Length: 365
Ligand SMILES: NC(=O)c1ccc[n+]([C@@H]2O[C@H](COP(=O)([O-])OP(=O)(O)OC[C@H]3O[C@@H](n4cnc5c(N)ncnc54)[C@H](O)[C@@H]3O)[C@@H](O)[C@H]2O)c1
Ligand SMILES: O=C(O)C(=O)C[C@]1(C(=O)O)C=C[C@@H](O)C=C1
Figure 1 (cartoon, rainbow, N blue to C red):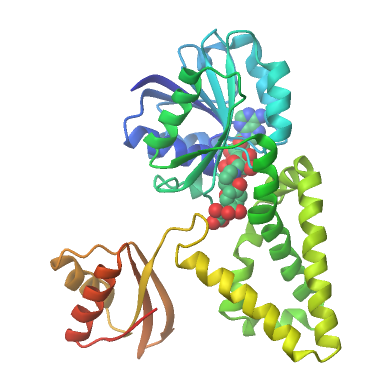
Figure 2 (figure 1 turned 30 degrees about the vertical axis):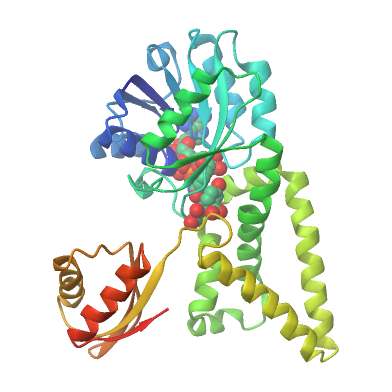
């Protein structure tokens, strides 16, 4: 257990980290710094921090073996500068920012001798912001990228890895440049496409009147467009090269599809969609990438009070753990469908049998 972790920026990520760190006993004391009074109040009230301060000074950094910077990436260099005169030798600083090359390069010149900076980025989050959106389970099973320099001592990297595993996440190491190219494709491009989808709808002459018709497709592809604009502005600007490279490839894909639709090239469209489907399905099946394997069923249930509790109890009584649950559709007063996910195929099969025996209509996915 560490003596003290100090978190600079107790918003969604910093607050979630504080909640997980205090609940899991990762440090004797967690100190938070945030200029927003509401975030400090909520962080203290929720037990994410033991002490909250409005600005960085010696008192918040003294005794901290680990400092986590969880501010928008545009603020991180200024925060490191602010901390610099107060950092004692041996202190390890990490961050949770979504881009790494720029901040890691700047940190080399800002960090005083005897102190260390190890870049970090949890691949988990949400479209919420501030302490109000914080979640103690946010890091559970998430991949957490670390970008240590080659000359960083093993015990320094080990201290940050200890935090990562302590939070329930899984550490993956790469260079800041590899990180930025990868997240440009898997996170930054999807965000800007989601924003462009929403703005496309709003810019159609009758776009607003179409909104009530939007179903799962629009909802699933645009959830992230509700994210914090200032945070995302900083991300795009601090990963300009890799984001522009991803946009170029995306534009080529869009042009190809446009050309095929204009030419009535049905075979070309089918082949292109076939490729996308095969790749996306392989991701869900866990044969590709980092998405956890999920074994799902969809149960049709009547719309009655206590229905979800009853369903969960039938499975819980048989020792079956539900990993994920989602209400897909509801017809008021009649019924709806619920998606349940399990860690193993065996549990999926057992759950389907139990729920069918209990009278539910069940399909495996
Ligand atoms: N939101 C996500 O899904 C997500 C996921 C992974 C990483 N990140 C990264 O995590 C970082 C924080 O994002 P977030 O979603 O928690 O944002 P947030 O807006 O919820 O939290 C940021 C916090 O930093 C505080 N802050 C701003 N300037 C500060 C300063 N100079 N000193 C101290 N505190 C300051 C703000 O008051 C706010 O509470 C960003 O760098 C972001 O790129 C976000
Ligand atoms: O909203 C989510 O579900 C996220 O995980 C957010 C998300 C992402 O693009 O996947 C957003 C920014 C990050 O830096 C990491 C994660």
